[in-house]
Length: 143
Image (tube, rainbow, N blue to C red; front, side, top):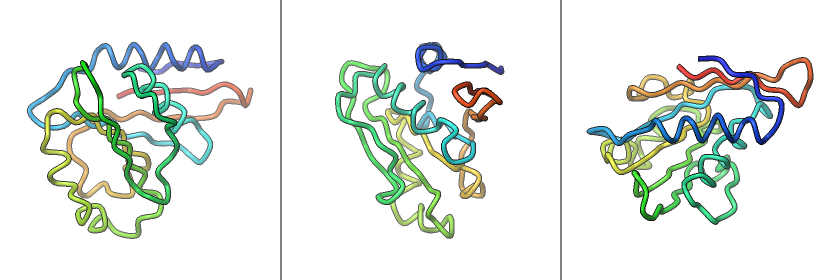
């Protein structure tokens, strides 16, 4: 499904609708966030975190690779935000316990730049972000 968002409020509604549809699986629920730098991947993650009750400031884990947020009274126990932009090889993610993380059905994982680790990505929902001509508008495609 494709959506056009012209504001943060519209993007938050798209994120809220997505979160409401998510259900824990037999393994972690994984959302792969694709798009160029500045296209809205981290903003979308911030909105999902807010919807799930995360009070911490959510920033891109570009340098630390992974941030884990504990969730209370939600469908998931943990929101895990991963940014693999700086990784050179998929094996680097494996060294961070990737197999264990994706095996836990209580994890909701949002991973930025999943195409960089495509060979180890599990089945996941693909979410693509694209800046439109009006630079404050985004096309968000959820597959």
